[in-house]
Image (tube, rainbow, N blue to C red):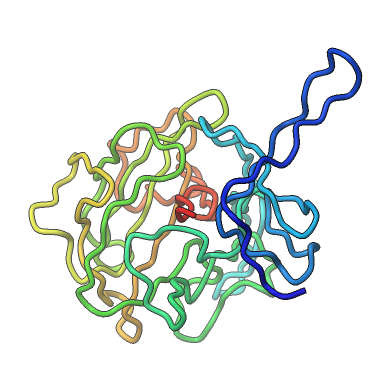
Amino acid sequence: MSQLAVPALILVAAATVGAGATPHAVLLRTAQEPVPSSLNECPSATLPDGDVCVHLPSDTTSAPETPEVSNAHHDRAGKYVVYDQIPRRPDRPADYDAYEYPIPPGMPGGRHVMSGYDLDQPDSRQRRGRHLSHVGHGGVDLPQKMGTPIRAIALEHQEGPSEVLFIGWLFGKTVITRHSLREGDRSRDYVLLFGHLDAPADGLVVGQQLADGDPIGTVGNTSSVDFVHLHLEARRVRDDIDLKKLAPGLLIANEVSVVCDPRNVLPLKAR
């Protein structure tokens, strides 16, 4: 079956069973929804309906609370390291290019991500190399030209503005922002790490509140001389942690925050 485009907004179903039964959820087709060559390829959070994929209704007010999962790998010295991490939720698209990022795409075909999150993978499948300081990758690497502006980004289910938590040297020149997200029945703090910057934005200060699109800095290669890119990492802060009392290096310590597949929290692209 060839790729097709589905006309705009069609009511799919509102079935009832017997007198007085509660209607099933109503599913809506979005405008120009591409139809996969096989309905087995319908993306996450959709189901096949005839020759199209329809989106399942979801709670748009909060994200489900995803538990952390333990995993492990051998570090560069051969030590077996156990850590916590939060894998991608099954309702979130696997395709990295389904999401918004703080810089424009810098790869062929309008793609963003050169190296993705792999701390949920077995040891043998995690990123490692002679020139890499760490085994495994807890974020996404976004190639772009030196000096490209980086903008603040509001995460899915974020409440209020984000806050600048740190400006300094961590992953090269680094900015860390704090975000409060509605998750389950409560607010949870997350941090976003913007690494390898050429420079933070002029006038950016710790404690500053940021709206979506405010300047963070510019893309660079500090502590990554051979690769100009933005390292973007998301972490969920553990309960009862006062981030403002911690030294910068502890912000990303396993006992303080849990590394998270960024696809759980990045906003989806508008359809």
